[in-house]
Length: 83
Image (cartoon, rainbow, N blue to C red; front, side, top):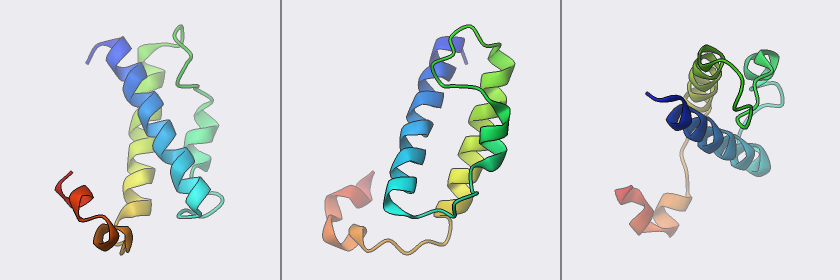
């Protein structure tokens, strides 16, 4: 994956994180491992490896937080289930 693609993915995952936190879907310390990396999704000059670690950490945390979750919005918005 090219660095610009990785940065974009990092930004998208950060947006998902913000939404999870806004909804209260995650514990307060859920993203502490990611936060300790201190790599911003807009840090274009940070090494690619730092962004890879951040994306992996963020993605695995998001997956763990969403796994096994029963989301009532799927029944409210059936068209979203196709995505």
